[in-house]
Amino acid sequence: MPEFYLYQFIIQLNMVFQLVISALIFYIPLKRRRLFPLRLMIAAAICAVILALSVLLRVRVNSLTTRFVMRLMQFSVPLVFGLVAYDGSLPVKLKAWCAGIAAMEIGAAVFTFILAFIGVDERETISFYARPVEVVDWAIYYVIHVALYALIYHFFWQKNTEELDRTSRNSTVILAVVCLLFLTVPDCMSNEYRMVSYPLFLVNRIYLLALAVFILAICTSIEFQSRYRADMEIMDQVLREERKQYEKMKENMDVINMRCHDLRHQLDDFAGKLTDREIESLRESMDFYDSNLKTGCEVLDVVLHTSQLTAKEEGIEITCLADGALLGFMRTRHLYSLFNNAIGNAIEAVRKLPEPEKRIIGITVERQGGSVVIEVTNYFDGHPSSPGETTKNDRSHHGFGTMSMRYIAESYGGRLTVNTAGELYCLNITIPLPDGF
Image 1 (cartoon, rainbow, N blue to C red):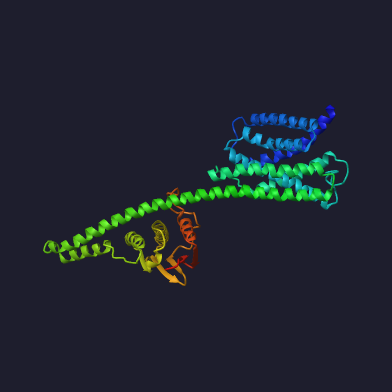
Image 2 (cartoon, helix red, strand yellow; image 1 turned 120 degrees about the horizontal axis):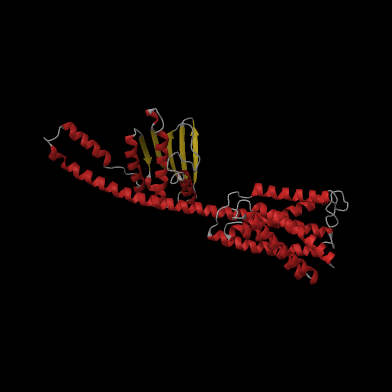
């Protein structure tokens, strides 16, 4: 009887060992806790107890239900290592645990199909030479399995683990439950009836392989969606801050225009006190600061006015031919962010150029078919920045320019493209016009 228990323990240990190896590979991005080696030993001791209990249950009560419970206990073993030895939230560990289980099932299925391809029935032996299993066969067995786990981790797993948002945490918990149920049940059925039909055994392996790939894809998607929502939250925050900036800018511009208007009417009082040249210089300055831009879009007028103030100081010329009425369907904060970033990037590019004649920025807003097309054209040094890059010193608040413009364009069903020809840089934003425009 003790020999029979030992035999069952070794059989179950084989599967648990594969699960642990696979899970530990996917735990690599997680931060290790203090006294990591000791924690690993504690986790191993706990897992040995769980394994012994599962073997005892398997031997004492041999039924499909106990097989199911035993498999659940075995699948829980890798999670013990994550809980005891690694830092991080439970959902992050659950996600890595699900990926580890999926990788183990993929490795098992691939190994089965390799044996089937060379004519070996895995139910009888794992030896490639169809002989009684020897140490070298076990070595080959584990080398292939671990190599498959490592390949899956390398090509399909995010190496930088981030904390998940609330939606992704809930999705991970649901995935863990689905992973347990939909992998455990067919796995138990496979072991229960594996000797009945070899084709049925292979079909079950195909099902487990497909399900494992699906689980792995969902794990990756959860990470991607969480990161995407975080980026969108930052983007919304940037847009809100830019809306406040626009409102403050408009308020300042209104004050300047009002002061310039009042001062213009008072210039006659300075006759005899100032020379004609001084009065003319004052008039030119007031004409510049007193905005008369009327494109049909108040937001665009504000951005153009403030941009021209900056551009004039640096010898940059901005020309604009825009039908602002075409932009009436867009939200204020979106319009401000779109033009402020587009013109700001253009100014940043041309101010680097040593040739004064190339410090020119052209802006057009026009209808083309059923779309409004926004183009900002300027010279540049031949090295455009990639989306998310910035040449500004404060990198924590910059680098979202092109990303936010693309986000805004796509939120209206449009697209953003960049074309370069020699030293010319053209930003093109095409947005479908709604009915009525």
